[in-house]
Structures are given as C-alpha cells and as structure tokens.
Amino acid sequence: MAPRPPALTRKYPCERCPLRDLEIFRPFKREELEFVSHFKTGELTAEAGTTIMAEGSHSAHLLTVLSGWGFRYKLLENGNRQILNVILPGDFIGLQGAIMDEMQHSVEALSDMFLCVFERERLWELYRDHPGLAFDVTWLASREEQVLDEHLLNLGQRTAAARTAFLLLFLFSRAQDRGMTRGASVTFPLTQQHVADMLGLSLVHTNRTLNQLARKKLIAWQDRTLRLLDRDALADLANWDDTVSVQRPYI
Amino acid sequence: MAPRPPALTRKYPCERCPLRDLEIFRPFKREELEFVSHFKTGELTAEAGTTIMAEGSHSAHLLTVLSGWGFRYKLLENGNRQILNVILPGDFIGLQGAIMDEMQHSVEALSDMFLCVFERERLWELYRDHPGLAFDVTWLASREEQVLDEHLLNLGQRTAAARTAFLLLFLFSRAQDRGMTRGASVTFPLTQQHVADMLGLSLVHTNRTLNQLARKKLIAWQDRTLRLLDRDALADLANWDDTVSVQRPYI
DNA sequence: CCCTGTCGTTATCAAATGACGTAGCCGGGG
DNA sequence: CCCCGGCTACGTCATTTGATAACGACAGGG
Image (cartoon, rainbow over the protein chains, first blue to last red):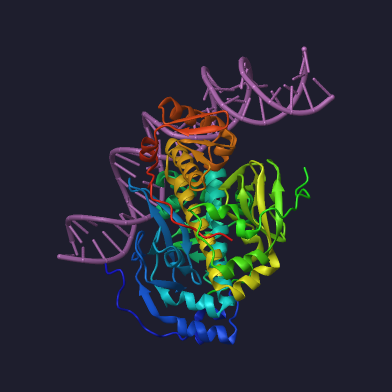
C-alpha cells in the first residue's frame, strides 16, 4: 500500500477546475485564479483505503479534494479510533500540518480520491500577496471549527438515535451541496464501523440504532447506498436546522 | 445582567500588555505592535456569569482575553448545554462571528474577566497590511481546531474517569502556561456542572467520577481550588502526552 | 472452486451511566 | 436572624450502552 502512488498528473488546469461548476463554491477573481494556478504543483490520485497523511508527520503538501470521500481521525493507544470529520470535494487538507509543523491527525481515503497538490512553502506567499485568499484559508479553518463544535454538541448531549440521525443528515447535506446525491439517495462509502467511530458508539450499538431508524422508515441503507426516507422526521429527531448552505471558498 | 457594562477603559497600552511577560506568548515585531495598538479600540470588563457573546448574534467586536476565565458553549432545545472549550488569557474570541457573520456559540464569563476590544471591520486591514498577523490569526483558529479534535477524541473514545482526568490535565496545563497556578494548585472557577457539561456526563456521574479520582488521591478539589496530587497517574489514566507547550501568537 | 476476510446482523449478559430523590453546607439578601 | 438558592454528596433503581460470540452473505485471491 504505497502512501503516494506516482499518479501525479496535470489533467485539470485551475481554469477548468471541476469544483467551479458547483454553486456552493464561490468563484475566483482573475488574479486569484492566476496565483492559485501557480500555487498548485500537481494532482494526486489516492485509492480507497490509502493513508493520505499520517499523524505525527511533517507533511510537505497541502491538498484540496477534487473528488471522492475521505476522513480525518485520531487513534488512541488501545487502538480506539475517533473519526473527527468526513472529507469531501472542496475540503482543504493539511493546514494544521502547514501551520503548526506537525499533523495531529491522520487522513484516509474512503473511496478513490482525486486531489490537487500545493506546496506548503508557498503558503506564505499566499498570505503576503493575496490577503483575499488568506482570508479564505481562515474562513475554511473557521468553518471546520464550527463543524467540530456541532459534533461535540452531538457526542456530548444527544442520545444514540439522535446522534446518528444528525450525522446522516450532516453528511447527506454536504454531499448534496456538492451534487453527489440523486433525490434522497447518495452513494455512501462508509461502513457501520466508520459511523460507530465517528459517534463514539460501539459497532453493535450503532447497528441497533441504524436498524431502529430503518424500522421506523426514516432511512434505508443497503449496498453502499443511503436513502433518507423521511428527512423531516430525521431532522426533528436530531434537532437539525435545515438552513440553506452558504457559498464557501476553496483554494 | 447587562451584557456589556460600560467599563470601557484604556488602562493597558499594548506596549505594556500583561500577556507580553508570559513565555508562552511570542513577542511582536515593532510594526506589528504599532498596528495592533491601532487595531485595538478599548478594553472591557465582564463580571463572572455575564454573557459576553450570544449565539445567533452578529457581534461587532473581536476580543482578546487579558485575564480571567470564560467558556464557549452551545445549547440544545431541551436545555442541554455543551461546553465547547474553556477560554483563558491570550484567547481570541469572536473570530467565527467576524468571518462567517453570525456566532454559532455563546461565550460566558466564569470569573471576572478583563478583555481587549478590536473593531471587527478592521480585520480586513489586518489581512491586507500585515500578512504576519493574518498568519497568526489562522494559527489561532488552527490551534482551536486541534483542541476540538482532542476533545472529540476524549468524548468519543474514553471512559468517564479517563475523560475527566484528561480534562483536568488539559485545563491545568493551560492555566500553568499562563502563570495562573502555584505548584500543583490552581484557583478553579468551574463547578461540577460545568465539568459535566463539558464531558457529556450527567452531574451525578461527574460527581461520582471526581470522587473516585479524589479517593485514589489523584486530585483534590475543594473551595474553588484544584490540586493535581499525582500528575503522573492522571496522565497515565488519560493517555496524556505531557509535551512542552510551544510559543503561541496572540493579537 | 474453496478459502479467507470484511461486513452486517442478532442474542445474551455485564457494565457504565442516567434519573430521581434527599440531605447537608454555605453564603447572600431581606 | 432566617430563608433560600447554588453546590456537593450519596443511595437506589432504571436505562443505555458495551463486550463477546456466533452466523450468513458476499467478494476477491489463489
């Protein structure tokens, strides 16, 4: 399992970045596009299951996801794994490593992924010459912080069923923003173990809880496909605010 | 309970900022100091128990804590409260509100606090003219993200006792970095309810767990004073890395 | 084709945690 | 001075959640 297969291509010039077509992402100004285009050093393909970044490493790169699913996680000495967040197209990976020197979490691909590679060293140029983009980087960090706040609320204060409903709604909405859903369905590369590790529940209890949601006809999840059968009931169970997603930047 | 008492003074010029004397904070360059001095619009006193920022508000200010304890939290409809993090001197408050327009959490003072006030509008000038400071802001956001990651790991994967030990070590270390401890003791303004709301445990169970730690002579907590009697045993219980704290920026 | 590993599922039992009720201490305000 | 509210403490019982084991379906590799 090579951590970085030699699939460094240059298929997508930034001007034709596949993310640009999605409404959820804000468009670049011309000079920003020029800089980002120069900031980008290549592309990277990662197979499902690959470790993209490892906790403790000094990663030399910053990455933006162009397609595919991944997740950030931390391990405990006893082998317990906490999945911190799921990573989707438009997400920026490795900022912590670039700013604080050392990654404090690992990143793994859930599906095959296609990523954009930036040189960590050049981040400083970005701050110096493009305050608008620097602001965007901070926006992304701040947004991640907000999401983590919500997950902390979820783990700390909700029951297993509400927690699960919240997570599924959260992931579905994010996928929907990126045009990865079809109606109430989405191709869902997580296993029940991933959900368990994200919610701080045991695998068995996660299974019980998911079945409970399925029996109540709130969801259906088979063959890597998740369907939200009754989004209103789920939202109600999870105290979910179905606010419209605002446009977000990406690098 | 006035949310913002009219205690807007100007006692501490940035050149004599009380935080500057602490080793944990990195010193400013001269031109940075000049800008920050100009960026700062005043000072603010908040009594213990005061709400400093409210979820949903469009706060007009950014704050840096000069002294005192506070906490960030979110409420659920059923009244459950999740405390997201404790706020100590040097912490920067309101960045989310400044960048994303609306605060997604509230902030409350645990003890009397003394804060430095910045104009939200001027944040843009900071990004435009002082990339070094912009980088520092991102550093702070990134660090908060890292802390939230650790708390998520804590809530999701550790037992009540380990969770509690971890939290106490975390808070003690942060207080220690800021010179607020004396030996193994610290004046600790949280109640057991706060600890419970931070750990996602019931008050009763938090009490049980704390007593268990006290009976094992790992901690002593009376009269608003917390003492870590056996830091090694606590660290062991909590899988705590006692890494040396690195210097951090502040604004 | 079988072997093997992953994934989802279920049953049983044990342990962790929550809910509720109660009590004592203490400090502040009338 | 007393009352009251916040905080800590503790007992009992209910509920949630975890641990373990076992099984079937399925996919991939030899």
